[in-house]
Structures are given as structure tokens and as C-alpha cells.
Length: 223
Length: 72
Image (cartoon, rainbow over all chains, first blue to last red; front, side, top):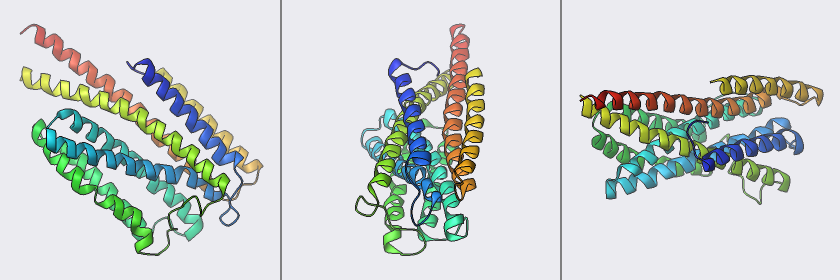
């Protein structure tokens, strides 16, 4: 597990255990949906992945604002780490949506507003990562990234509201009143598991960002 | 590295087990269900592996510059 602390290792074990339990309950324990059948089981990983992507980009937004106010490189490191993990969750969300879409809608992909805005969201944060790799100067990179991190977040509420504003193929957002109790608690269980995974990956990614910053400084010193 | 080899083997075995389980209970659309869960786990495990690998490489580079810097 690398040079992590006991707390970090415990977090990793808890995340793994929660994911195992969440997947087991989603695949085996909870009954199949009456309308959609077993393919609805994908909801227990698709929806938490989407929520965690939103959370990750919200953290990018908050850290970007903090960076622009305080110019502290620690906020930039957290923002960059969260953006990268958010991209992973967005890719998972889109791929799971395609797996769910094919048997439900008959197509893997359609230019539905929810799918399109999510694809744009992915493009924004892939662009955020690309921007970071182009800028050589650390201060300039952090400033540009923070600006993209603030502006880019505007798309998150658009993605969320897209199913309400434009009623097309994608189903409206689930709420405790619209889903059965066993579906709801399975969803919450998996949401908890994904949150632990996000927390664990953030601890690891922030440590890597700190190391990368150290390497950059030493390279500049030795040049 | 050996830890990740074990993780890879366990992952493949779990996927095979899941495939047979979904077949035994005659789960409809089991290809999509197994692929979806398999993909989620693969993506998260791959990213965790990449983080560890990148951290090891970066730490080695930092250490090598430290050694080079000592002689200056």
C-alpha cells in the first residue's frame, strides 16, 4: 500500500470492504426491479459514481476559489487531485450509463441532454488536466487551473437539472419518495462505499501531488 | 508489484464466479450487469494501481535529485 499511515491503510481497507458489501448487496441480496429487471442493478454503481463525480468537481470549485483568494499551493494540489479522481468517476458513470442504455433504450449512446452535458463535463475536466500539463510555471498553472475549476463547475448544475429542463430519454433524478426502500438503502450503502473510495484515493493523490511539487522544485534548483 | 498481480488474479476469478452465478440464477441481461460491475471495479483498481506506481516513480526521482544535490 505504499508509505501510508495506519489511518490511510484503515481507510483503504474500509473502502474495499464497503465496496465488496455494496456490490454483493446490489448483485445478490436486493431483488430485481419489477419494471426493468436485473439491468437496473447497474443503478447501484452508476448513480454513486455520478454523485461522487459531482462531489469531486465541487471540491475542485471550492479549492479553486480558495486558491484565487489565498494563493496557497496546497489548495491547488487538492483541486488538481480531486479533478483527476472526478474524471475517473465521470468515465465510469458514462460507461455504466451506456451499459444500462443499450438494453433499456436500445442504443449505447444517444445525444440526450443528460448524456451530452455529462460528456461536456468530462471534456472540461480532461481539458483542466491537459492545461496543467502545458503550463511550466507552477504559479501560472495553479492560477489558470483555478479559473477553469471555477468556470467549469457551472456545468455541474446543468448536468443535474438537464433531466428536469429537457424531458427526453434519461429518467428523472431518483428521490426517497420515488424509489422502493430496498432500492434506496442499497443505493445509500453503495454511495457510502464510493465516498470511502473517493476519500482514500484523495489521500493517495494529494500525497503524490506533494511529491510532484517537490520534484519540480528540485529539478528547478538543479537546472 | 506482487500485490497487484494477486489483485488481478482475484479480480478475474471474481468475474468468472459472478458470470457463473448470474447464469445459474438465470439473470436477464447478465452480460451488461457483469460488464458494468466488472468495469467499475477494474477502473477503480486500475486507478489505485496507477497512483501507487506514479508515487513510487516520483519518489525515486526525488531521491535521485537529492543525491545529485548533495554533491553540489
